[in-house]
Length: 219
Image 1: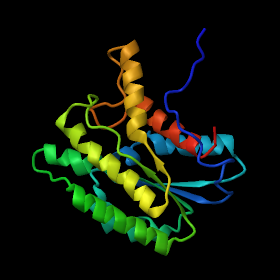
Image 2: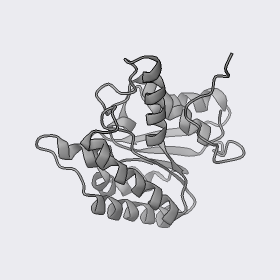
Image 3: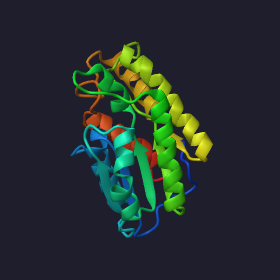
Image 4: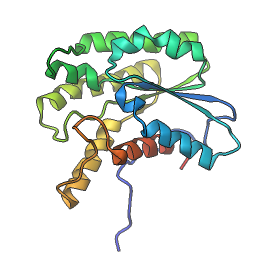
């Protein structure tokens, strides 16, 4: 029998679980982060189950419809003022997707890079001791050849470049989602990670949470 291997391929970023007892772990993003139940809930449950003595406080700082410019507007209120020890940033889907929806506006690639860079610079200055983890945006529809996903490729690359510039780890959820979609649909054409091409099913949220836990050497 062939060995069962998870599709994430996520390599731990730490040799041991690095979140210390009593620390705050904040997840910043849009509706994918805000979702209940979602990956933030699963992450919190895993922390409490695997490390019950740590008493880690998980903060959901996701707001539906947010683009990178919206994160910037609320950065002090929702992130800096809360003094988190860990921050994940998951943004970019709406920056592209909203340009394809009526009465909404996305964010150009140049502005996305400029504002995201400003966010990272500010966080590194104001929360110098905090650990930042960047997520690449996942997908807009579960076919890679759509105009939305073709445009999203550049935003994914931008997150990688920003991670390199700021010396921050990047967790490539985009690549992980596409690997899972390809493998799942090869076995079952009805396999889906999202409800509408953007918002994850519970399976999709589980994949995000597992990937982050793997990155933190928690599992």
